[in-house]
Amino acid sequence: MRTLICKDLGFDCEYVAKGETIHEVLNQIVDHIEDNHLKEWGRMEKNLDLNEERKFLIKHIKDDNTTPI
Image (tube, rainbow, N blue to C red; front, side, top):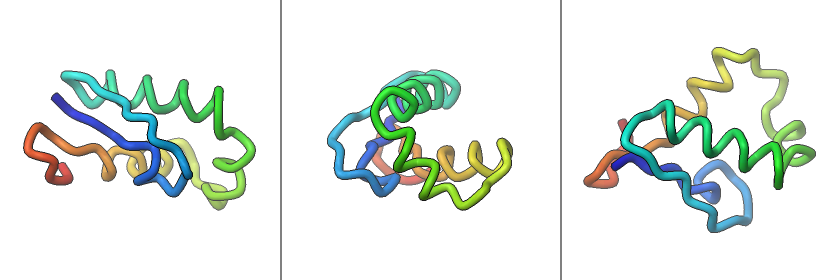
């Protein structure tokens, strides 16, 4: 199981995206950000392009033993 905790991205939020694959976790966290943190994300992302944004999110995903992947 892979997880990404919203708080690890800098939000004051306890939401946890979970999935068997990085793709599943990314889909969940992107949907969550769009629904709950879009204005904050816009200020935080500092004009990242789509690839940089994806790399930023992926580096915060943890695997089963909670170490960054």
